Length: 288
Image (cartoon, rainbow, N blue to C red):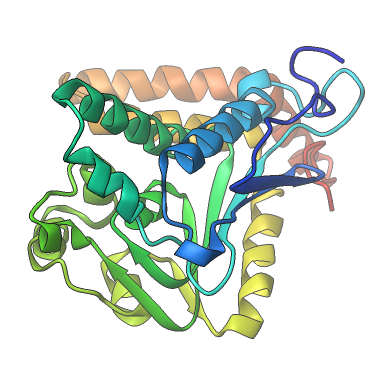
């Protein structure tokens, strides 16, 4: 196998799993007994899966398939096993923090930051299914996803850190980008739980379904993504980051967008998209 073949051995994990179906990767948290709380092992396992899938994504490789003709990844779906999505940091990990040195606590925070950054910047289109509770770090996971589907009547989401006298600092940049300044401030100060309807209203979730309709809703999003140029999806994330961080003049931004548009139109994917439109056929990335 090549270094980045889909058939390469996946990372060894015991607290989460990765199932691949064509261009779709299904990542499931599997600490159901503790509501999928994030401990050091689970965090490390998720990071290893995100690294593995990133290296085997269309956006990273610039190709639809590996050398064996097997589809590279275009979508990642994140789920939590059982009744709850993710209860945030494991209580034992938080308890142990009090006995650790500042350097050890900094290392733990860096590991957590790597998890959220890797998910937020993943080249694939990322979808989350959220049911039950999502607290603290669980909200961080939600904020890093591209599309979030709420499932069931019992969703409870909270930036709960202030209840423990701490702050949602590591997840803060991602939640802030998701909901904006005013809502981030309100939710982080109140630290109370909001239901699915309010979560949709503030932008933490994109759609809200009863449990029996949720998987169909996710599949519709997947189907839509697969009609879109996979490199364009990955480049859209980079485009957003460029806009977020732009510190030049408006005129410089206008010129940059002209250059970027020209480059994408002249790319192999851009040329295929234009040709397929003119020839009234599906582009080569459309799996329908």
